[in-house]
Length: 191
Image (cartoon, rainbow, N blue to C red; front, side, top):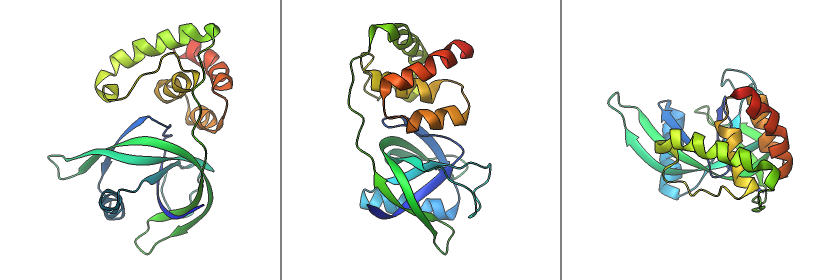
C-alpha cells in the first residue's frame, strides 16, 4: 500500500506505457510536479466522473501512476509536461491537503504480462500501426510491440475516439485478449 500519493484527477484515462501531455498552471499541481521531479516520484492520474475537480467529485477506483518524462515552459508561462503511464493502481482512500491537492492511499496492481497477439487480432495491430504513424511525434520515443496483445490493446484503447466509459473499462480489464475483443466492434465504429 502506498499512502499519500499525489493525485491528478482528470477527465481522461492514462494507460500503462502511454503518453500524457499536460499543461500545468494551478499552484497545487505546479507544487506537485516540482515535488515529484525533485523526489523522482510518480503521481496518480485518475479519471473524474464529473467534469469538474471539486473535492466532492467522484473518482474512478482504478487509475495509473504517471512518471514525468519531460517538461518545458511555454510562452504564456505555463508548465508543460509529458507524463508516461506506469503501473495501474486501485484507489482505497483519499484526502485533501490545505492547498486543495488530493492524495490517495493506493494499491499498485501488478504489471500486465506480454501476451502473443492471437492471429484473429492481426488486423487490429495493423490498424494501430497506421494510427501511430499519424501520431508520430507523440509516440516517437515509445517502444512499439505490435505482436503483444497487451501493448496493442492498451494503445488502441488510448488512441481510439471512444467514450471515457469505454476507456475506463479497458483500463480495468486485466486480460488483454478480452480487451481486444471488447475493442473490436468499437474499432469498426470509429472508422
